[in-house]
Image (cartoon, rainbow, N blue to C red; front, side):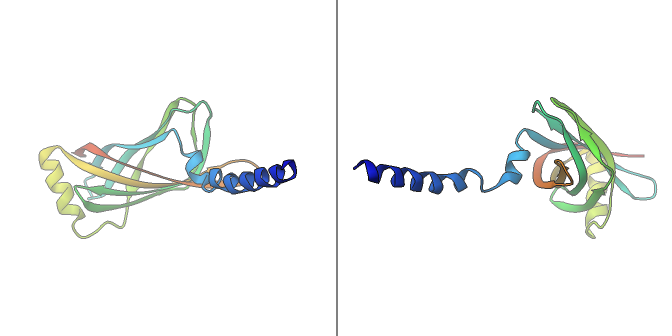
Length: 153
């Protein structure tokens, strides 16, 4: 009976071990929250999205690339790509204002309608590429929805 116990325990260990490690991308993004704080249309029609990432963790992160897809009232406004590295301090937040490009044909009327009401509901789908160590990177996806003020410059 004792000879059978060790192989059974090893089999159980190898069966459960991969289940705990199957998606490290989700592990690194735990405690991070993306949020759009303002949408602004400039005089030339460009839409700027001000966003920030809240970090409730006790560790800092280094982001090497960020890509955001932003929607306003269900209409695709465009994508923002940030290639400049950004630090997210521990138990703090960091953010930027990014230019949105490549929106749908309905983007301009959606922004005009949101300007008239002063706000709109947004959705943001983001891909973060974190620099871990020794040139290793980790991708994580974050998403959020909410209400955002919409202004004109």
